[in-house]
Image (cartoon, rainbow, N blue to C red; front, side):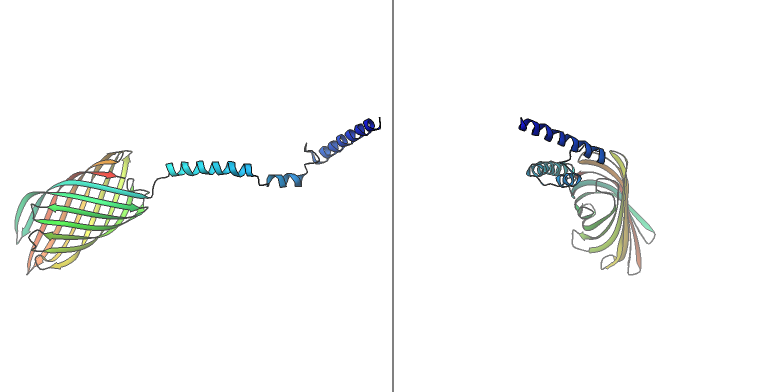
Length: 253
Protein backbone atom coordinates (compact mmCIF):
# COMPACT_ATOMS: atom_id res chain seq x y z
CA UNK A 1 0.00 0.00 0.00
CA UNK A 2 2.83 2.36 0.83
CA UNK A 3 4.45 1.60 -2.57
CA UNK A 4 1.24 2.49 -4.41
CA UNK A 5 0.88 5.78 -2.53
CA UNK A 6 4.57 6.64 -3.26
CA UNK A 7 4.14 5.88 -7.01
CA UNK A 8 1.04 8.09 -7.29
CA UNK A 9 2.85 10.90 -5.43
CA UNK A 10 5.91 10.66 -7.71
CA UNK A 11 3.75 10.70 -10.87
CA UNK A 12 1.88 13.77 -9.71
CA UNK A 13 5.12 15.55 -8.88
CA UNK A 14 6.59 14.89 -12.36
CA UNK A 15 3.37 16.12 -14.04
CA UNK A 16 3.35 19.30 -11.98
CA UNK A 17 7.01 20.00 -12.72
CA UNK A 18 6.49 19.52 -16.46
CA UNK A 19 3.47 21.88 -16.46
CA UNK A 20 5.49 24.45 -14.58
CA UNK A 21 8.34 24.17 -17.04
CA UNK A 22 5.92 24.60 -19.95
CA UNK A 23 4.22 27.63 -18.44
CA UNK A 24 7.51 29.33 -17.59
CA UNK A 25 9.28 28.84 -20.89
CA UNK A 26 6.34 28.90 -23.28
CA UNK A 27 7.62 25.66 -24.77
CA UNK A 28 6.52 22.06 -24.67
CA UNK A 29 10.10 20.86 -24.10
CA UNK A 30 10.31 18.28 -21.30
CA UNK A 31 11.99 19.61 -18.21
CA UNK A 32 14.71 17.00 -18.55
CA UNK A 33 15.68 18.50 -21.99
CA UNK A 34 16.71 21.99 -20.96
CA UNK A 35 17.90 24.66 -23.45
CA UNK A 36 21.54 23.98 -22.63
CA UNK A 37 21.04 20.26 -23.08
CA UNK A 38 19.33 20.85 -26.43
CA UNK A 39 22.23 23.04 -27.57
CA UNK A 40 24.72 20.36 -26.65
CA UNK A 41 22.61 17.75 -28.43
CA UNK A 42 22.58 19.78 -31.66
CA UNK A 43 26.39 19.91 -31.67
CA UNK A 44 26.88 16.28 -30.77
CA UNK A 45 29.08 14.24 -33.10
CA UNK A 46 27.78 10.80 -33.98
CA UNK A 47 29.25 8.07 -36.13
CA UNK A 48 25.91 7.65 -37.91
CA UNK A 49 25.80 11.28 -39.06
CA UNK A 50 29.45 11.15 -40.18
CA UNK A 51 28.79 8.10 -42.34
CA UNK A 52 25.68 9.73 -43.85
CA UNK A 53 27.58 12.94 -44.64
CA UNK A 54 30.47 10.96 -46.10
CA UNK A 55 28.13 9.22 -48.55
CA UNK A 56 26.47 12.56 -49.39
CA UNK A 57 29.83 14.22 -50.07
CA UNK A 58 30.90 11.31 -52.27
CA UNK A 59 27.74 11.70 -54.37
CA UNK A 60 28.29 15.47 -54.66
CA UNK A 61 31.93 15.00 -55.73
CA UNK A 62 30.85 12.47 -58.36
CA UNK A 63 28.19 14.86 -59.69
CA UNK A 64 30.68 17.72 -59.88
CA UNK A 65 33.27 15.59 -61.67
CA UNK A 66 30.67 14.64 -64.28
CA UNK A 67 29.15 18.08 -64.79
CA UNK A 68 32.15 20.40 -64.34
CA UNK A 69 33.91 21.10 -67.66
CA UNK A 70 37.59 20.23 -67.87
CA UNK A 71 40.01 23.17 -67.85
CA UNK A 72 41.92 21.59 -70.74
CA UNK A 73 40.86 22.10 -74.36
CA UNK A 74 42.32 20.87 -77.63
CA UNK A 75 41.63 21.97 -81.20
CA UNK A 76 42.65 20.28 -84.45
CA UNK A 77 41.84 21.89 -87.80
CA UNK A 78 42.62 21.93 -91.47
CA UNK A 79 41.65 24.07 -94.46
CA UNK A 80 42.06 24.62 -98.17
CA UNK A 81 42.94 28.19 -99.10
CA UNK A 82 42.39 29.56 -102.58
CA UNK A 83 43.59 33.06 -103.40
CA UNK A 84 44.86 35.47 -106.02
CA UNK A 85 48.42 36.78 -105.65
CA UNK A 86 48.98 40.27 -107.10
CA UNK A 87 52.59 41.53 -107.19
CA UNK A 88 53.31 45.14 -108.17
CA UNK A 89 56.90 46.23 -108.94
CA UNK A 90 57.80 49.56 -110.59
CA UNK A 91 54.22 50.07 -111.71
CA UNK A 92 53.90 46.61 -113.28
CA UNK A 93 51.40 44.16 -111.77
CA UNK A 94 51.33 40.42 -112.25
CA UNK A 95 48.49 38.25 -111.03
CA UNK A 96 48.15 34.50 -110.49
CA UNK A 97 45.63 32.17 -108.83
CA UNK A 98 47.07 29.87 -106.19
CA UNK A 99 46.02 27.23 -103.65
CA UNK A 100 47.59 26.19 -100.39
CA UNK A 101 46.84 23.79 -97.56
CA UNK A 102 46.64 24.95 -93.97
CA UNK A 103 46.58 23.05 -90.63
CA UNK A 104 46.63 23.92 -86.95
CA UNK A 105 46.77 22.31 -83.49
CA UNK A 106 45.94 24.20 -80.27
CA UNK A 107 46.02 23.27 -76.58
CA UNK A 108 44.50 25.38 -73.79
CA UNK A 109 44.61 25.24 -69.99
CA UNK A 110 41.83 27.54 -68.75
CA UNK A 111 42.61 30.93 -70.40
CA UNK A 112 46.18 30.24 -71.64
CA UNK A 113 46.98 28.31 -74.80
CA UNK A 114 49.57 27.40 -77.40
CA UNK A 115 49.00 27.00 -81.15
CA UNK A 116 51.10 25.46 -83.90
CA UNK A 117 50.21 26.21 -87.54
CA UNK A 118 51.60 24.94 -90.82
CA UNK A 119 50.89 26.10 -94.37
CA UNK A 120 52.21 24.11 -97.32
CA UNK A 121 52.30 26.36 -100.39
CA UNK A 122 53.84 24.30 -103.16
CA UNK A 123 52.47 26.55 -105.92
CA UNK A 124 54.41 29.60 -104.67
CA UNK A 125 57.28 27.52 -103.37
CA UNK A 126 57.30 28.24 -99.63
CA UNK A 127 56.19 26.79 -96.29
CA UNK A 128 54.98 28.61 -93.19
CA UNK A 129 55.53 27.32 -89.65
CA UNK A 130 53.91 29.47 -86.94
CA UNK A 131 54.00 29.19 -83.16
CA UNK A 132 51.58 31.29 -81.10
CA UNK A 133 51.03 32.04 -77.41
CA UNK A 134 47.35 32.75 -76.61
CA UNK A 135 45.84 34.73 -73.73
CA UNK A 136 42.03 34.76 -73.55
CA UNK A 137 40.77 37.99 -71.96
CA UNK A 138 37.04 37.36 -72.30
CA UNK A 139 35.14 34.09 -72.51
CA UNK A 140 35.17 30.79 -70.64
CA UNK A 141 36.13 28.48 -73.50
CA UNK A 142 37.71 28.49 -76.93
CA UNK A 143 34.46 26.97 -78.26
CA UNK A 144 32.44 29.99 -77.16
CA UNK A 145 32.30 33.75 -77.56
CA UNK A 146 35.71 35.11 -76.64
CA UNK A 147 38.31 37.83 -77.11
CA UNK A 148 41.90 36.55 -77.23
CA UNK A 149 45.29 38.24 -77.57
CA UNK A 150 48.21 36.44 -79.23
CA UNK A 151 51.93 36.77 -79.73
CA UNK A 152 53.71 34.52 -82.18
CA UNK A 153 56.46 33.89 -84.68
CA UNK A 154 55.93 32.97 -88.33
CA UNK A 155 58.84 31.42 -90.21
CA UNK A 156 58.40 31.48 -94.00
CA UNK A 157 60.96 29.33 -95.80
CA UNK A 158 61.44 28.97 -99.56
CA UNK A 159 61.45 25.34 -100.72
CA UNK A 160 64.59 26.06 -102.77
CA UNK A 161 66.32 27.68 -99.78
CA UNK A 162 66.57 31.13 -101.38
CA UNK A 163 65.11 33.00 -98.38
CA UNK A 164 63.87 32.63 -94.81
CA UNK A 165 61.62 35.20 -93.15
CA UNK A 166 61.31 35.13 -89.35
CA UNK A 167 58.44 37.46 -88.50
CA UNK A 168 57.22 37.95 -84.91
CA UNK A 169 53.75 39.40 -84.57
CA UNK A 170 51.03 40.45 -82.13
CA UNK A 171 47.47 39.45 -83.01
CA UNK A 172 43.89 39.59 -81.79
CA UNK A 173 40.92 37.25 -82.28
CA UNK A 174 37.23 38.03 -81.75
CA UNK A 175 34.65 35.25 -81.91
CA UNK A 176 30.91 35.74 -81.35
CA UNK A 177 28.10 33.18 -81.34
CA UNK A 178 25.04 34.74 -82.95
CA UNK A 179 23.01 31.61 -82.30
CA UNK A 180 23.67 28.33 -80.52
CA UNK A 181 25.40 26.67 -83.47
CA UNK A 182 26.30 29.66 -85.64
CA UNK A 183 28.69 32.58 -85.28
CA UNK A 184 31.29 34.95 -86.73
CA UNK A 185 35.02 35.27 -86.16
CA UNK A 186 37.90 37.55 -87.10
CA UNK A 187 41.67 37.57 -86.64
CA UNK A 188 44.23 40.29 -87.34
CA UNK A 189 48.04 39.89 -87.32
CA UNK A 190 50.59 42.71 -87.66
CA UNK A 191 54.02 41.26 -88.52
CA UNK A 192 57.04 43.15 -87.24
CA UNK A 193 59.39 44.69 -89.85
CA UNK A 194 62.32 42.45 -90.76
CA UNK A 195 65.33 42.68 -93.05
CA UNK A 196 66.23 39.77 -95.31
CA UNK A 197 68.73 39.47 -98.15
CA UNK A 198 66.16 38.23 -100.70
CA UNK A 199 63.27 40.64 -99.94
CA UNK A 200 65.13 43.46 -98.19
CA UNK A 201 63.15 45.53 -95.68
CA UNK A 202 59.80 43.78 -95.34
CA UNK A 203 56.56 44.64 -93.53
CA UNK A 204 53.29 42.73 -93.73
CA UNK A 205 49.98 42.05 -92.07
CA UNK A 206 47.15 39.52 -92.36
CA UNK A 207 43.40 39.67 -91.82
CA UNK A 208 40.84 36.85 -91.84
CA UNK A 209 37.13 37.00 -91.05
CA UNK A 210 34.16 34.79 -91.72
CA UNK A 211 31.34 32.55 -90.55
CA UNK A 212 31.13 29.14 -88.92
CA UNK A 213 28.49 26.53 -88.14
CA UNK A 214 29.08 23.65 -85.77
CA UNK A 215 27.54 20.57 -84.27
CA UNK A 216 29.03 18.96 -81.20
CA UNK A 217 32.79 18.62 -81.61
CA UNK A 218 32.85 19.57 -85.31
CA UNK A 219 32.94 23.04 -86.86
CA UNK A 220 32.70 23.97 -90.54
CA UNK A 221 34.05 27.43 -91.30
CA UNK A 222 34.53 29.75 -94.23
CA UNK A 223 36.81 32.79 -94.05
CA UNK A 224 37.85 35.60 -96.33
CA UNK A 225 41.59 36.08 -96.29
CA UNK A 226 43.91 38.99 -97.09
CA UNK A 227 47.69 39.24 -96.67
CA UNK A 228 49.67 42.37 -97.60
CA UNK A 229 53.44 42.51 -97.90
CA UNK A 230 55.67 45.46 -98.77
CA UNK A 231 59.36 44.94 -99.56
CA UNK A 232 62.19 47.34 -100.50
CA UNK A 233 65.47 46.03 -101.90
CA UNK A 234 68.14 48.19 -103.55
CA UNK A 235 65.66 51.04 -104.00
CA UNK A 236 63.07 48.82 -105.69
CA UNK A 237 59.70 48.54 -103.92
CA UNK A 238 57.42 45.51 -104.32
CA UNK A 239 53.86 45.26 -103.05
CA UNK A 240 52.40 41.78 -102.81
CA UNK A 241 48.77 41.13 -101.95
CA UNK A 242 47.18 37.71 -101.47
CA UNK A 243 43.40 37.77 -101.32
CA UNK A 244 41.00 34.85 -101.31
CA UNK A 245 39.03 32.43 -99.14
CA UNK A 246 39.70 29.64 -96.68
CA UNK A 247 37.28 26.72 -96.10
CA UNK A 248 37.89 23.97 -93.58
CA UNK A 249 37.01 21.88 -90.53
CA UNK A 250 37.91 22.08 -86.85
CA UNK A 251 37.41 19.55 -84.07
CA UNK A 252 37.20 20.53 -80.39
CA UNK A 253 38.10 18.15 -77.57
